[in-house]
Image 1 (cartoon, rainbow, N blue to C red):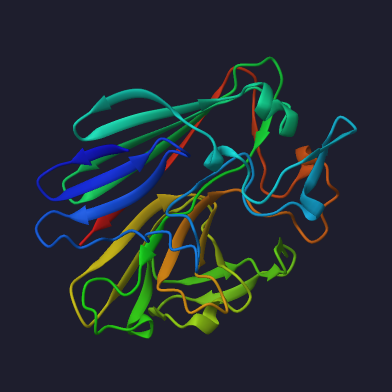
Image 2: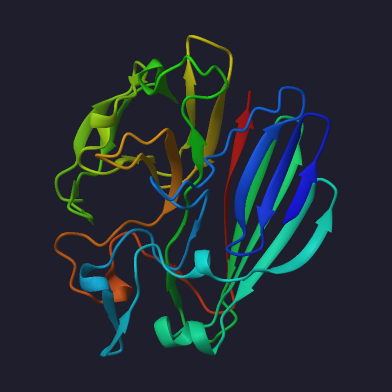
Length: 291
């Protein structure tokens, strides 16, 4: 386990999946991150690559060949190599190999840098395409945050999600595990969205952000503790497992989507897929402020 620490926060990163496993306030010892109780969900903050969500029948085609990939891809289950490290930052890297090419026949290097700055953890991703061919991929983050935070007398329903800018967003509905991009639904976020487990009865709330900088705050009026995630991405998922009464919520920046309900299976035409030209680099990231 790798440790980042400053005056305010201590962060633990597991090289397996390059996953954030803990963010604690140094003064109060408050744990912000979900602690992966398998009764509800056995992960903390997986990185989603080379797909986000699920493929129809867990398979896709490239150049007439069929490949199999399970939900959210395989990066989260692989060891990342330590690339560089300081007391307040760490960079980890995972590159294609023979094993990855059996599921995903492309060369790539996925790098994630975590940097602790005051009360904020900054997360930056790069995807490099070292080959002479185009690289189709999706990328996402899936951090889970404890709800309630701090006060043991608080309830899940005492919390709310506040989105800035305040406006009516388009929500991508899910039909089973698949995106129904042809039938977006307006979601009024001019006011805070109260949390309730029923909110996730049809899986995640998926917001279209159109790559505009957006801040999503998770908190309660009952105390001062919460998190604020800022990102510039095409989509953001808000999720807690249903019908489980799980004591956490994930705020998930996505550069990709689950297969559309009308998907053909061709990876190159998959909904929201990124097309990285030969020998080019894709960069993205997000920041979480803990309070």
